[in-house]
Length: 382
Image (tube, rainbow, N blue to C red):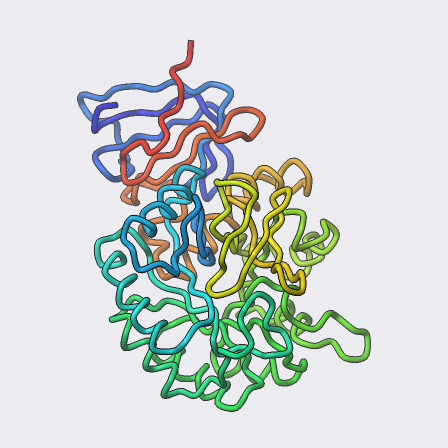
């Protein structure tokens, strides 16, 4: 397709709502306000055009992992998720030795500087041993601000989010440090009580890492972190909408309480996403994937997901019956705002990057464009 193009005839999801038979004009790498003098036209009747998806929590895919220090492995993960509509993503790490994580962060920062990644998300090692999930217990440590700063320094400005348990020694000081440095402090893998979670939010925490998972469940006399994170307007809640991590009624509860403006769908995907069942490693932990569900070999804990965001979107609108604009907020606009990048991505508006996803009438992905270039080119309409 030419560098200048016009996509027409589809249902286009804009910030103001759905435009039936709409049009998107692409000039080079950006969305244009007016049609260029010379442009190719792609007519997409019966289709949907959405902004590209933004995933702030993903560990791997395509048989590869962000824990690798091989460039080809990182590019494999990126390409796998791009082909499923994720045009912007953070690289999420897994708990490891602090020096190893620092080296990994330095390596990932190079790809962030090149524009292949939006940054790095450290999930661990500053998490609770009581809620460690698929993280190796012996490698966990308290969130000492000096250790947190070591990872931030190693990432050379690419660190965008750190998940930690704020009830641990140093937790609140580390949350304050992250907020001061402009890095998202996320509450997750935590055993925090309700009051401790409120203190973390007041200190600057703004994200709930995969809400409901790896934290105490709601209790009518001891509401725990879930209630605190859901009720505070300053917090965006991550949800893994794969039908495994959350029951549909729980997803509905989160949307009802938080509202569509405060939900970010994530994949929390590991190597098997877009690849298939089999045996894998998640960091140092052995994982078996059966029927698309990833669990630790030792103990059976859920070990991330095999989800891609196009599947999360289709499930949201066809099974969970979310309005399409609400699902788009959760997959694009809300995470883009969290990253401070909504001026460039997260919606289809003139001047923004030409990142978009084309779906057919059944909400199956048929096209992906990133910065004006097709990653997956939709078939020509008859």
